[in-house]
Image (cartoon, rainbow, N blue to C red; front, side, top):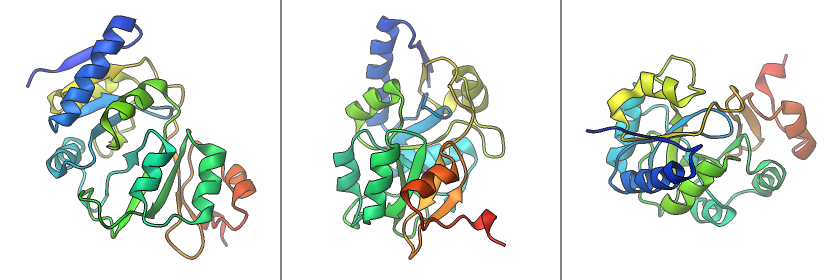
Length: 219
């Protein structure tokens, strides 16, 4: 498979790259894109073979399901079964941005993201290039663009060095502005729980969700 790399600092290449990436996603191929945290490797969320290829490219098992990026609030609403009010409070405060929320997805959805037990991790990135691509493709399964066990890629070149020809299209948006992955909050249990500290500090999350459980802070 021939690999295409687009320098998205050039307007012409940006336009061509977005089209090529959207076409690749529709064909069930993998793409690399910048986000507001680190670079991501993405695939059509509703093409199981593409999601399986994403996991294989990373060297990651089905026991670590792939998060999904969305480009708008209505898309979020369409994917979830019944999000708690806490979800919308967090969305209003931190989306688009570095917060991933885990909710129960609509059981009618025909997707296979791994062993999810009916849950999905959703995020809307604050990165124009990513949002433009999501507007063209719909929800994308996206994980950090690195081989499992290696540091997340903060440049397109680093992502390509790790993932090589497993990816059809690389969108180079320059170095990411952050090296910190998103924070993850699980809303599927009785008490909202911080699963991963990241781009949004726990104190800021607790300003919105005072009952947030932070396991690492427990004695």
